[in-house]
Image 1 (tube, rainbow, N blue to C red):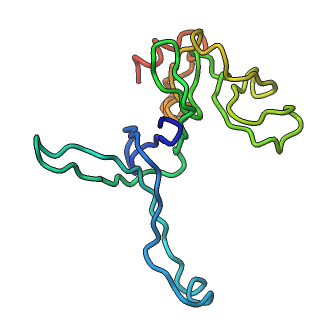
Image 2 (image 1 turned 90 degrees about the horizontal axis):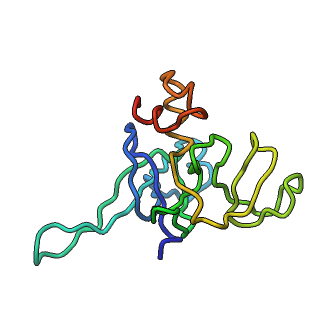
Length: 165
């Protein structure tokens, strides 16, 4: 069931991890005032079923993630069979970003479900004809590259920008 998958970057790392999203709070209080006086931290995880050794039971491992990089899986694959996730960049164009719409933004029209933001986020198209698309990055990777000054030529030559990173 690919549509339940998520990916995110590990906490304090640039490494992506795929699995199932879960969150957990440090504690639970009885009274509202306790939450105000002692805020509870929420931890965010990607859970994975991983092999330990041949013939032994698998382990369900939890990896703490940076919640700001959490991306949901569309359940669709690009022309190379790679899963497409929210915030992925298609065909190396910075403004072909996979997004999810819930119909609240009437400016873009009826963009309910998965779609591709285009033209500097001023237009959109449905996520279809996927055999033409290729996932070439993710906006969170590009953001990091821009911070490092690497992605100046991203739109002109995305493969060169990826090799520099």
